[in-house]
Length: 171
Image (cartoon, rainbow, N blue to C red; front, side, top):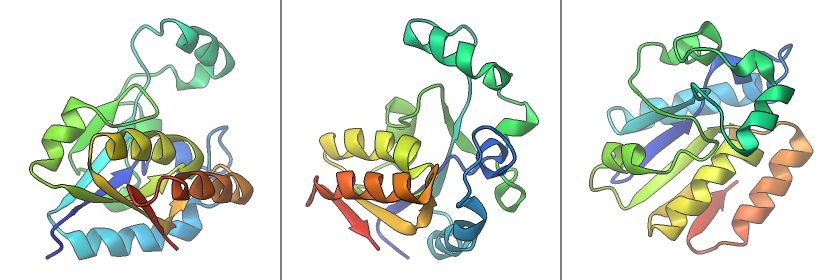
């Protein structure tokens, strides 16, 4: 069994639906790699979910004015994990970055993580950087990450590569 933990970022319907406003055109292509990683890590997997805040404040007010469809309850179907992972416990956050006390607690004593999921250029990037700052060794599984576009995906991977050796991008 791997000594580190796999963190699957936001494998949710809202990002899988290519017809939707937040759908990643890469999601379906990377899903088999995510599934393989989940099988590899078995019980050492943490799933995260992005959910909308109850009452957006500050800059989030303008954000949700642009994306009003997203202001739904955490149990709305768009925020559910894709069917392959349905029913798995999740660490939920109302922010792009998932690093914080709930994820820290879910990791237990792990000092290294493998990250995959969606979107490379938003939630994966926003999670990887503060994790590295906290002293967690981060490996981003590029082939198991979906960006908002292939170009944005590559740009985010390139940005994270600048943080070596705190962040490793496994291509």
